[in-house]
Image (cartoon, rainbow, N blue to C red; front, side):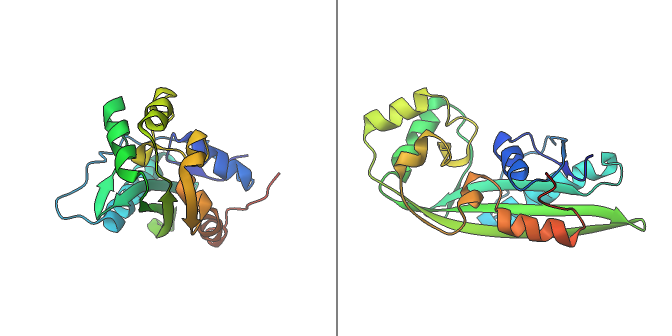
Length: 195
């Protein structure tokens, strides 16, 4: 009994939707995640989340589609996913002992009466990192956990020990702000807590 299409392959987003009892099917969309010139972080994640949701809509069999995207913002610069282990090490060195912002966009769309309905929202959380030693950074990157995550870390994994403080939604940092997502789903008629 599927009530939703998740336009993502993210294991974290799957687990978060399961946590609130939503039935869904995954339909990952291959979207170019390159930021545009002069595009700020808010516009960037919103554009990608909406593109993912809208790209999956034609094959959704009438089900609502959820798209999402997360980025890290440090000193006004968007940090995406690392391309190499050295890239991950460099990112974590920059985050060490600093505050940064995590922005996640959630976009939900469906088709009703031959018209596309789209709602979206961006949620922001401030995360503070402790001072990290080079050994901590290198050992963490060696676990492989960095490589598919914006900013090269997963707060729900081993990098939890790096986080000294969080101001805002924890699930937003994981990859899907649950309070906001649940409100959007309920408005579109998708039940939560189904099992």
